[in-house]
Image (tube, rainbow, N blue to C red; front, side):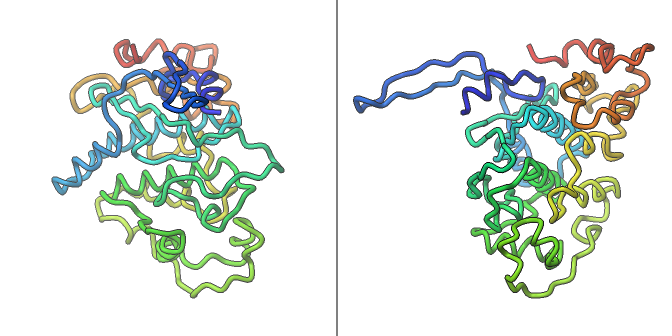
Length: 309
């Protein structure tokens, strides 16, 4: 599946497959598939660890850039019916110079088909959506959105928001913040669990979860991603259009190094297909063409050196 999926993906925020070949293993019938990918030097995980070791938080402009590009990559794969199923900081590659982010590791990815069951034991701990912890097999690509919400919360906090060594541990951590799920919320996650008894815990206010300096827009975005009911979570394009990313759409914004921002607005029609009405918000007025083209001019207007080689 990984090779099939990688061969059909072409997007500035997805790691590029350069080449693949087969090799034989030690045993007679063993055959290995080898994927050769473009080189991207860093990961969000390593960058984030570097900051937390020195008791610092990643500057907000970088959090905005990383998360925005993650949502763009999700909008693209979801528009192709593909769910990544393992979104975590280790799978977000980074070029620190240009601040370009690329989603990698499609080893767990799957084209989800309504009515076809899927395994629930996927996705790395800390980033697993509650419906997966509840053992749902008819989940949707909304599980990627939950994981992205966990990544955003982690970048803002400097540590994982829902740590836990087991599904039960993680559910306890989720309940501590979101409160006990109602019967309706449990039914939406997995109808087989509605008779399960949970201790009644009140939701913890989001603004108390984060340090005082975290902007209200960031907290608003997290709260709209980390929703029990999967269909209530923002879709990735709606997330890109959120006010938290408004600064990226302003003219003249640059990286702290003085370099131009990476390509952010070269949306294709395929990408916008999840929510075409958002084009007006997603493509800033100073970049949209006079005839209303979908970012055709936008892709030429951003910095030349921001595009990957």
